[in-house]
Length: 126
Image (cartoon, rainbow, N blue to C red; front, side):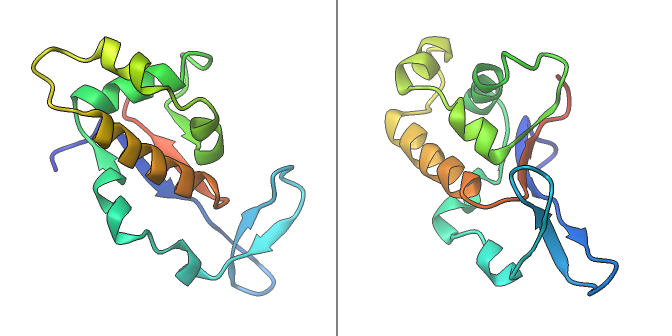
């Protein structure tokens, strides 16, 4: 893939005491050690780890309207703003093959990422 309009990253810190990876809690007060095996993306969501053009650009625009200058969103924040299919469909070009089934599958992936601390959706420009 020669680039993407949106992709998911996992941001981990490394404890200077234990050397183990961690994520911050929701208040950014405490380090939570992580078992990396719990962060393996299920196979059915692999197609949504990076997206190019059309619908993915639309999701990015619809979920980031409050942060126009930012080029990232924590997965839980992205999920909290995830649009309904009708909003996405209204912005797609007529020749775009993205369907409601695609939308629902991407929603399931976005929800899975949102349930784990440390995942961040990023895009190359605001």
